[in-house]
Length: 436
Image (cartoon, rainbow, N blue to C red):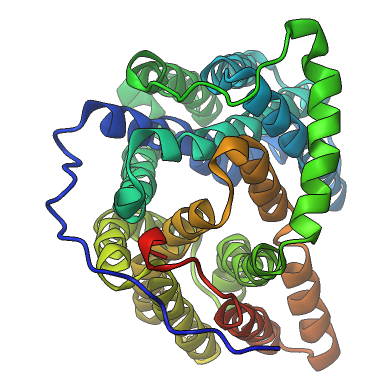
């Protein structure tokens, strides 16, 4: 196997393409502000909380955890099957915004439905959660593909980073308000914490709908290279999906990048999903852990923007290298965590690179795929994202079980970061003009 050449990247002045004065760019980036509230408040925080309390029908904790796992599993399986096909159909029809609007609408309706579920209604709540999760990830796939429409290649790093940065900030702001309502519901005219949480679902739905409007109004997508009649779209999508599967197989650099991304993003998502459990297991309070999560999101806002500028000047891959190196150091340091202060330092460190590795991976991938099939190829990208956090939790759990130490379990995640780093170093990037 040939070694990869150094990143060929002619530096582009940061001011060459204006971000803050460009309406399509801001409209595109604010969709991340819109839908990240669903990820943080619904997926991470309040649905698990409500399934174990308000919506519970008396089931024991292991059964509640099983129900949540089944719901997440169903949503992930549907998205894995749907995303590439949806991308193929949208590529042929040239209607990514229409599909994005449809899935956004589904997500908003499903999130609103969560607010209407009464005590003990875990099955209905889980159904709304699954529909909302499918809509969230399907819309995200189409949103990612629109990156190519709003900016030239030399600006993709900064534009992609801007989206993640606004997502971190917007979701954190809404989460702060929701936590305040949860802590003191009477101050907001509500009787119980459950009422506050149900109202938070309504806020997420309204937030998602409102801040999606700029993208739908002001982002103009390029016309499709191939068009298909409505009745032919599904058949054409299946045919194009089959061709793209073969094409990915025959593009070793793209396939190698996808494998590298699968490994290291699995490590990233495992850290995200296991951070709360790990912190609690080390004696931290739920308040301290929640504070660390908020700190990570607030730090992620400026840090993601900084990584976008870094990727534009030095190359996206070098930026990912830096982020993965920090993850390797932080994962090793987590083994020695003892106090809340240690956990906060770790949260700040992760917040500095979490958005960077996600945003630069998206912009680097955009340079490796054909523009006329970007919807479908981003479907594969998001499919790999949904496959992620499968190896990591199993790896960490198995290591902890065998060793009898959760610290060893966390340390085992290093294998994912190191493996992804090495595979990424073997990817031969496009020529200099691609600014990879």
